[in-house]
Length: 69
Image (cartoon, rainbow, N blue to C red; front, side, top):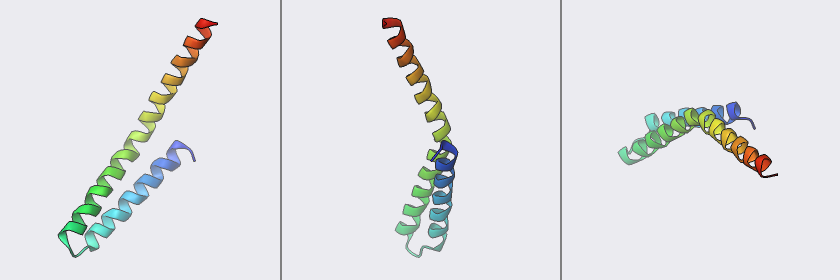
């Protein structure tokens, strides 16, 4: 699964939980699904950024290894 597919999955789950929140009768259930939907949406937005950071860290580590050789 690539980053875009993972972000799409998070967006899908966020929308699913938003729908559950709209359909919920109890306030506590509605709040739970709303909060979870927001967290999933936030994660979807951060996936590309985190991937870029991880790639830069890997490149930095590889450069250090090459310099030590």
